[in-house]
Length: 183
Image (cartoon, rainbow, N blue to C red; front, side, top):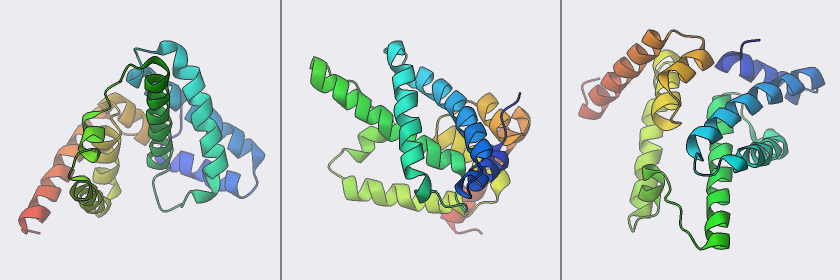
């Protein structure tokens, strides 16, 4: 059984929020599979923690399901929760072992002395990306923001890998033009 694309996941979650238990079970099954891949790529130093992280994220998704807004991409919402759970786990491990685990480069930017500027810049970039059509916005979010591979994004979005690459290229080109004031 193939995993549904962004719209399919959104439809499942909306049905689930309306009380459809079968849709909720299907949604959680698909999200669980994606989370396992997400955590395997990001916690290769701690492979035994993958299932614990998946369970923590699934519980947080369940507890926060009321906060989902159907206008936002469901995968961005899920991966934001997953990322926070990963950061929490890394912090807990560092506290227990005394070994600091470096965060992603974008996490480092948030922790600098320029925190207000970094947060403002991130907000501005995400607002620009949000203004793009879905065919550009979603590939950029999945590959450039969430860190999925082109193949994973293509499967998620129901697009070919070439279409994802083209969407990213054209979307970034459109963003650059907007920043330069040409559009």
